[in-house]
Length: 483
Image (cartoon, rainbow, N blue to C red; front, side, top):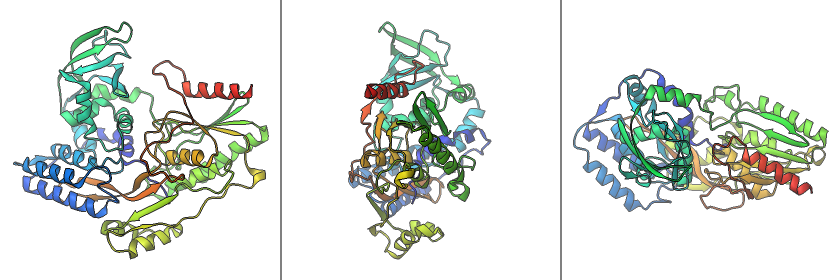
């Protein structure tokens, strides 16, 4: 019973494919676009677990009417996406989204000599800061705050971008912006802008200043993006930092597989189990009193992986949720007709045998910890951040809610209580794929609030100081507890 990776994160991780040659997008007629919009809204209401949980139906109704009224002529796929995605994003849920047109549109845009906003940014609360300057204006320094962009307050610009992103909060959407790169999303929302006027506040002197500059070739920008350190870390690592054991489990999937969640090899646990078993063998052999588990920058995966790790220090049976509710529909049934896994047959039967639109709870058991003599009984410290996603957030919630360890770092952007377990359907004319959640998954402590996992002890990661503040802070935290 796996919790899917965030759809939008998977899209971000697939951006390397946009460089492949793709045919130019076709257009659809105004009548076809209207039919797609009607089909989209009708099907979401039939399949989504609770489409109106965050936004009233009247808001959706008004938006649909406005969109259809604005369709006078044929529309290309990029323009149509700019209509579809904000409509879908009204759900306010990360797992309800449309397919982003990077492969079909951005690749050709690069090849045709398109340009981008020549900076990388970081968003902290409502403030936007320059982190990388790729323009020819050397006076703009990393850390300078961006206040106005082409005469618009940056908050107004961000509001337009937020409207095109699915998610429960601006905090989550900010983490997604950092993954996609602001420059790409700016193009996606506003199309090509060839020159910019920036009003900024200097980091060093606090002075306000204005700069005019030209956009940068998208192909050149992509080289810069490719050279940056990735936000996600899939790798597995075990080591000792003096007398403290440090374990980064990495992605909760088979690293040697393709990553395609439709392929069995992706969920082969052999390599992961071997790594975890050997790591804990060393930890137990060394009688280490302190263990740090680093879940930062981890996009998640399958709970059958993380459960094996948790069993080494859990002190009671556990499960990744307290409630698991599903809504069935014709589209969901078509998928589950082909599900053959033995452990999912009870869920399959409920999905197939209930009436379309029915909501019901899925029964589940618990996962047992290892026998006491095989378990780790020291103190466990778990590092989390805004890039701890999906099953990683669930893992952090299990540790916090059952009291298996102490969490440090920053609140996660993704939420352990979520509308998830996603499926897809294509729109009939545009063939844009729409992802929807069929389930409500409630975190182990029973809270239905759609908020991230909060650390027991917050530690701020300071931008661009070259120090791993969270890890260093945790090591200091442990040293202070030893005294």
